[in-house]
Image 1 (tube, one colour):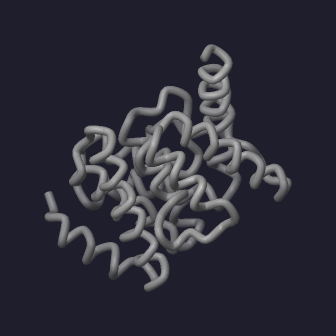
Image 2 (cartoon, one colour):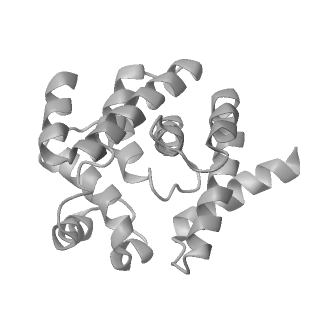
Length: 191
């Protein structure tokens, strides 16, 4: 397996300067969230570095990898180009980079849409992508504070934010995102 430094170098070669900087910022946020939640910081960091590894290759190449993937691809991920890169990134990380750690692969795979029953590393990378240092959307500081205090509350807020954004763009909602939202909203109702 590649070292962390080698994976950073691979990402640097495959990504634009802006996207590479974003990936390092996500990795740094993932490492902090992992520390706060008792998870392996190196694995979280690696997933952060690689989460957008296929984001800037042509959509046709991304879709080829998505179609080859065996990671529970939903319909939206086969028709919405903005969603191709996450399952493609997991496929690339496994089949080209030789990463076989399911935590890392699934954190990359679900970092865009989430899913019901998310694991700790999946939540960490999903939220790290939303709160990384380069993010500047309205209320990002509030989102960071929520995520650093409680991952599950962070997930509910992040999913509400993401779903609202998708609906405002009149884009399709992946069923995995709906399932994740229903799970976290259900938890809130029970509390």
